[in-house]
Length: 159
Image 1 (cartoon, helix red, strand yellow):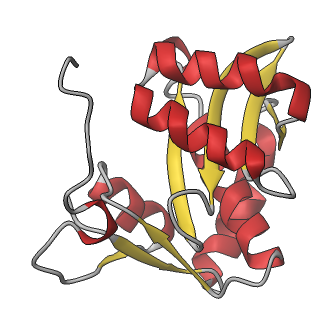
Image 2: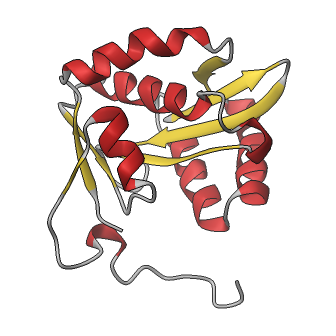
Image 3: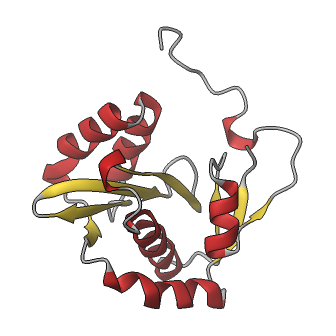
């Protein structure tokens, strides 16, 4: 999967921001005492690697993890500036909550935050749903023959 590049000054992002304020889900920065809850949730619903990246997001100041919450329940998360500065991700939404626009809300809020922090572009490393990112925010593939920053990454052999 390729790395993608997104302009944070694109009108597409501004237009998307106007559309995402209607889901009724609260998107907010995670709080330090929620770290164990969020990291465990990501580990259970996604992967150990993503849980590691979420832990890094909590070490940033401000915390580089946004969460989607409804009725006191965690529905999704999105991180930025974890594996590398300027990187968006990982991000995920609980299986039973998909299709409600939560992922788009998290993406939009994260990219807006990155822009506020001074980024002009965001990278989406080893992007899974390339077509989604291209269609939703105008992301373009970065031509490269390797896996970029993830080339040679160590993985737990028992998983």
